Length: 419
Ligand code: GLV
Ligand code: MN
Ligand code: MN
Image (cartoon, rainbow, N blue to C red; front, side):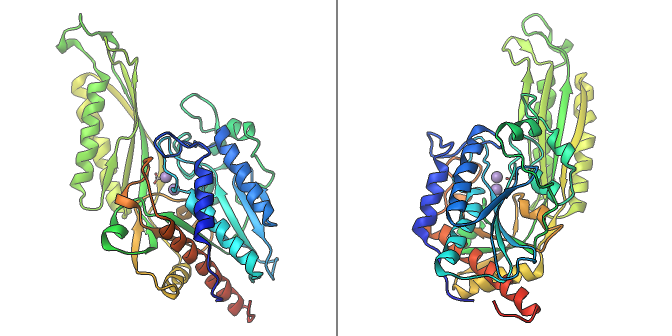
């Protein structure tokens, strides 16, 4: 493993340039998937890759692959990357760091004239966030065979626009069928999005797995009525039922402490008029835990709470589970490459299980995969104030580069060749 060093300034300048595309007044980024801003950042990223001599291809879910040839171009590439879409009030680092650190790593290799054994590819997965089209990690889910392409393309946003139509509209539906793109391995660098690394003064998280995640959509139906003329005992107030459900989701997570989390993150109140008793509420539930058996128990409690809360209020309620990403354990060889890379650079590390979902969690089903975390200031993410320093980002990029080279060297050794 030669001692190649990434350029912290260059990576930071790329991060800031990308953050300007959809940049918000509060210093964050709003770049929802498959919008015109997403097209702009994709065009920018593609131009950057092509300037480095990489070949950019796109699959029919819009995922981008930027390839640099190696010695053995018959081998599947070692891939690294993340996503360039953001939450509506997202930060500059969630997703972008993993893609742009991979770009910086390739730039470092190109400058040094270092030829890898396997080809390498930078990946930008479509719709990791799931903010516009649920569920999250859509393209990596199709890539891994979790969802069918047609089902994913038919997902609609809250305005009724389909994923497929939005993808066509920005001109990023490629030819290659999603999933027909074998990988030798996949590495994803990401900000932690939680407080642990910062609290413990660690530079790098060696991510050993990802906790399980389940998403639900709930529709509570009552009756629109006049707020002034309808006596309290005659109301069927859907928002009152929804409010009690919000409280119950919180209680269910607390009852499965310390690791469980549960959130109602989105609610649509109809008709949303101050002098109408709300007749209908749509809400989302997000439950997470590192163990499937605990998620089963949380789900049972949630299902039981629906009629228990809504029946006495005269409300109808329906719920659909729209995503189920089971807990993941990453590949021991890939994790070993991350550990070796962090140790070689002298960073303080700890093993960590990801609280957030990531494309790597689905890719792990079809390729050896691991992740690297860097600290998030104050543990804050999915927030415009999200921050990791130039040095922290560069440390992550350095470990990413060396982990990929370590894995590449192992591939070459297994084949009896030195890169
Ligand atoms: C993705 O950011 C998720 O964990 O929901
Ligand atoms: Mn992310
Ligand atoms: Mn995110």
